[in-house]
Image (cartoon, rainbow, N blue to C red; front, side):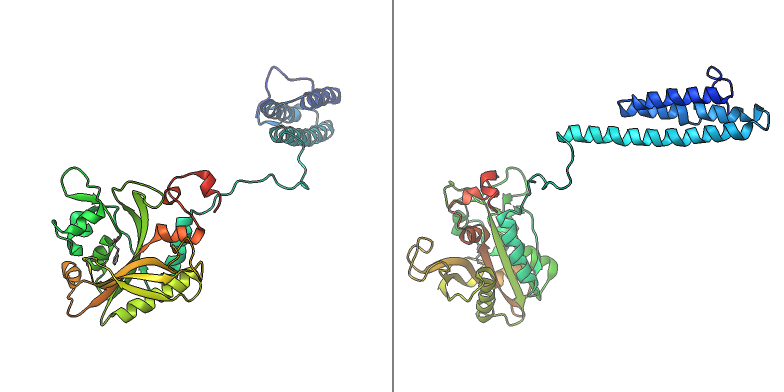
Length: 350
Ligand code: PHE
């Protein structure tokens, strides 16, 4: 180690005192952290002033070395502490000025903005938990679907009138792709991939080319359910739907089935439940005391066949829960368009 040649004061106590006075003054007057870093290097660094002093000690007569050596080491310790103290004072000052005042640990914290889960996410997760607890798996499918999965495999051939009611967005270009109009194509994908016996639900976005109003939106959410096993009947369908309703509304609701037509189920039903909001009629049930809850039915043999499943061996039921509508019912939301509006005034309420 060599001392910087240009600052080699005589090795004596008076010079060390002078050095101390200078260092203390410089450190005390230092008002920013990077300058303080330089002072540290200047005095305490490997090539620093004190290192230079120590390196030159061996040139002193042996009897003088201990006294001066101890003096240098004391000064080293003193300056180290001074710099550390100055550093925390400067850091604290910087923090306080950033916070606009001194820090008081006893003050309550400043209010924090917290996010929350979208109501659709909340309800989806709740229903997923319910079905997973009954041995269902959660399946998924693409939002841009083939004509085959969205229609044909679901027993809806090209000229079938049921296509009109689905107000489809077609994707231009090759491949006959559509924005899926319902979550039912996931039935086909689940059957193709998993093979029976199977129980699956599939929540997701669906799209319809519709004029929008308070109860119609071009993009909304459904939750599909599918059970295929041996000997599955309408009795299984009804009991599963009752469990679903208990899970959602947290009490027993009377239900009724009306015939409903969907090409991919036979027989097909519309399931209504007693209005959970009134006992004498209200605006939600339009005074009828029933609310239309979900279409469902036994999986049509053609759907099983299209997915490579033998309808003589297997049977199943399917249902299509309108998630958007359910979320609206649950939270008393009166305009479906709010759900995907991204409007914070709406979202902050959840
Ligand atoms: N996919 C149908 C629709 O959106 C609903 C449905 C699902 C009907 C499953 C019966 C069984 O119109």
